[in-house]
Length: 458
Ligand SMILES: Cc1cc2nc3c(=O)[nH]c(=O)nc-3n(C[C@H](O)[C@H](O)[C@H](O)COP(=O)(O)OP(=O)(O)OC[C@H]3O[C@@H](n4cnc5c(N)ncnc54)[C@H](O)[C@@H]3O)c2cc1C
Image 1 (tube, rainbow, N blue to C red):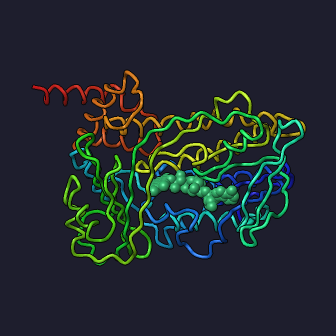
Image 2: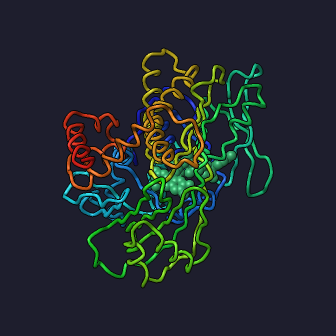
Image 3: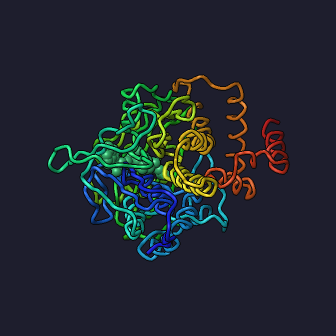
């Protein structure tokens, strides 16, 4: 049982829509603050670490950034130990990762940055098990949240209408002191807000036309010097890449990707051809004699979308929006789950701070500062992803004036991280959302970039 057994909780009942990564992590922090937490999930109760129909991205490679892993470890002290014992693979993010990035192999050395690789369903299953251990969290499966229930003046959400997906009938109304929308990219909140007379949040979006295609293989050989192998395209000339992860149960998961609405493989022959067309043949050479043990899975992400809840002047009390419902990132950078973890931690922190301040704690006025905090959390990963996307002239959007400089500077950083440990380490810390990008501009790195540039422009 997790340690959330404070005798008296400051708040009453929280309802979380969605039992995926964001919803589970929200429930975990809310369980410390609320007498009871109900998670509403339209899918069935998971009974094994397998892909859920409602979360089809689970077929594809999911990287858990180090920042996300550290938060998970904090929220669930035994989680990482359990996952390692049951099959997660520990990967030294330099020595065990062969990464061909923008035309260079990253430098290899024994680094301090160790991450875990596993399938997405395996990770979600383990988090789910831990949240199930919390005695004040209730799960309602095969139940969909369809409408908000509001006060008569519509200034506050006080509950949610439920629909039984099994009988296909409306079920009951569920009261809430705080409602968390963790229902993913397909969230109904913008539409429901408009029906209540509010404005939907403005969106920033980039059409990236990203295709994912994956197969699973059995590990039949250890005759390679990596545990993960990544081929990443050099934009704008190249738009295809691949990510091969060693995952639990002695398997490899290979996801091939392409930007710009490129054709995607429709069968294994096309998948092999696609692998052959990557910027480096390493993945193709490795899989050409293997036989997949799964069917083909595909996923299309037309655009990345950021919903600016933080900018809304009017928003009802009693509701917050987090996870993919708030922002869908370019998944190639592996940010979604770790950002959701950061958001959950800050939600818990803000609730705890209010409870200390207020004699009779309530959530009025929480939404705005929370959404502002979410926007702060999102800003760095969003910037990292759009910087790469904007290398493609085909991707529309107004480039800030400094984008050209960033493209040039980061290209030098990418090149240097193939030979220089310090640059590589700083770059990885930024990618894993452990440090702010400003570390790439510290004097010692600026100096190395200057020397590199001088040498290479001669
Ligand atoms: C192809 C792909 C690859 C990705 N790779 C990575 C990666 O490498 N690393 C990473 O960190 N992230 C990755 N992501 C993102 C990651 O999957 C999400 O950020 C993560 O799942 C958190 O999303 P979420 O919990 O907010 O929403 P989701 O995972 O979409 O889950 C939403 C949940 O809400 C439920 N739901 C929806 N509506 C209702 C309703 N009305 N009532 C009840 N239940 C409802 C759904 O059934 C579902 O269970 C990837 C995404 C995609 C698409």
